[in-house]
Image 1 (tube, rainbow, N blue to C red):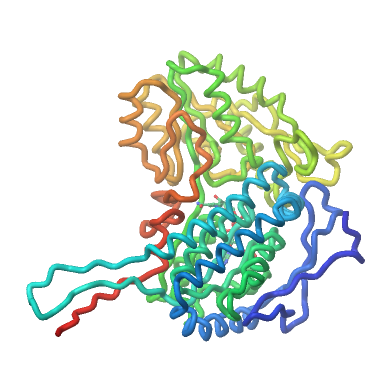
Image 2 (image 1 turned 90 degrees about the vertical axis):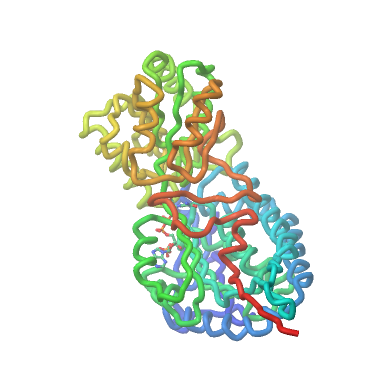
Length: 488
Ligand code: NAP
């Protein structure tokens, strides 16, 4: 555990130099499992620092766009190797600053290295089209070109894998980046930038600024150099950013979810309970694709609920660094208040709190943001706990008497990120896939989890209705098409 005097100070990266803010101010971050454990001090940047980062990225774009794609790929491969070489250290740091279990952190760091490699390779496949020309003396073709400076703004819940899946495709396609991570998790973000820097990324190609969005947000979104903003975070912040950007700035917003799992009556109940637990409580429910509603057929409802409560009781809660822990703390104090507030709202609305929902403060839990995973039963579709994103370990169980009713309930929310069904009925599965209003559909799988090489994103209020993140589809966001008519 770091004492106040041993705490390391981490700097911004601007124009290839690790620098302090102009104001000299810093802020400290703390371990959510033990708030007396200080993780580090980071630069409390303001708009002036962001402007410097933007200018640096703008200058670097002029040469980086012309660097050979193979050279860009080599740097990403090297950064991936460095990330994997430090996997144990980085995973521990991630757990200390975010709270998730060490196993989850290891997976996330590893996945980030895989993402860098994936895009290193994809960067060599960015091609245009040749188009049949009516004029035999003119060659018509398209080129995919980089946009310029990309502003990357990311949340704390996947504090390295989300930045990796935005920064890697931006860089391989010849863009330069200004990256601001969530203020709760700047250390693992710093590590990602550090490995890219060590791998040989030229000065100014990636710029890193930490600090509160209230002091940096305007320039990150509206500076004239910014050609695209890629943001993952809350729907409220996303809407604000969407209103602020310039007309010529491209925007990609990955926002909240209220993801349902439908449990049909032909299932193995134990399996459906496992899917609910994994989707709802892994990562302490702090996943945008987390299962927050389980819609269960009447005929299996009671058995499902009994088993869900039994399994929930057995979950081991604690510091993610300790062995055998399944549920870590919430990531910060405001998350703690938010979750406890929704538990009160659920009770006031008349739902029955079947288990959990209380803060745990005794003994080893006394210094952390621990809440016992909660299951509400008797939830009706219009209750706030069935409509609003809670972003914590709270599952609302809703009864349905038919597949059609379950579908209606599943779609009756403003979000549309991920949805799952548990059944072996292939007709139902096809109807579900066709009619569910989400960007990601899971069959006999939890609502959480996605492949780094497949598109990711939602519909309705969960994402902008433009570009997909992740996989090959992500390249479209970071490139623009130029059409060439070459007469000869
Ligand atoms: P958040 O409060 O919206 O913050 C996300 C990031 O945006 C942080 O870096 C934050 O900086 C910055 N930010 C906030 N307001 C801004 C503004 N007006 N201008 C510029 N930057 C701004 O979200 P969070 O609490 O970190 O993350 C939880 C949310 O993310 C949940 O709603 C979850 O569903 C969503 N999420 C979505 C996905 C997805 O792919 N759909 C994935 C993960 C998480 P500060 O930290 O300095 O405030």
